Image (cartoon, rainbow, N blue to C red; front, side):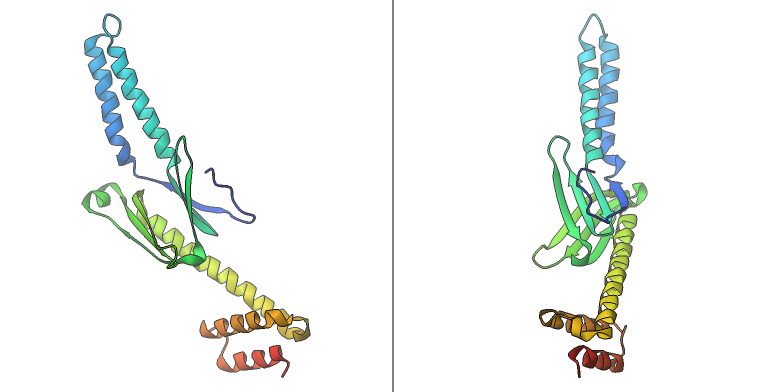
Length: 205
């Protein structure tokens, strides 16, 4: 992967497009070798046919290796390009839904289409011919759950510290702290009574 990782970021999964996409170039290379054998390597120019087929296979193979999808504990990266570099990122906290589907051949050879629904301003991201699409989908879903849990824990820790000494919370951050407190109540982490008590402490009542 050519996209640099952020501080504290780790790779959870790296996957490629299906190997089925290489079957055509492989067949073409084998055909070129067979044709060159019957044409003759020395007296004729059959080696040109074989070399062209093998070169095409090599280019397609390295292009296939460069086309990857990477899931980290922060984001999903879609990266491609052998001679040029293309990369698109979908932050985990912006992903609303992940789904996948497979046709008959996809179920037989274990490849399919994965769709990521992100924030409205970003829209949907489609990944086609993904090897083991279910694994990619499940990894993203689990990474989202872990990411949300870590963020919630951090918010709870910050709020706990603020409630111990409310006077240390800057006025400009008070609104943000109250919003985090309300979010914890909405998620069921705090009861209504705990929410009102914590809010009163935060407001100094």
